[in-house]
Length: 81
Image: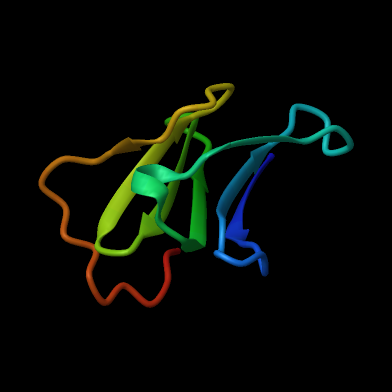
């Protein structure tokens, strides 16, 4: 399981959380300390994708580190399916 979002703390914190069971969660750094609101899981690839500002991030299933997908400009992305 993976969640992305933004805290209401001051200053705002950009949060990604991962869980192997849906009950216990661990916070991990977001990509480039940016907020993400859209997330997609591709089971055939075993990867999560999220839009962080104008960057597309990729998180391998079971990993705790987002990586930027090279060559993708996600600026203006309104959703993912």
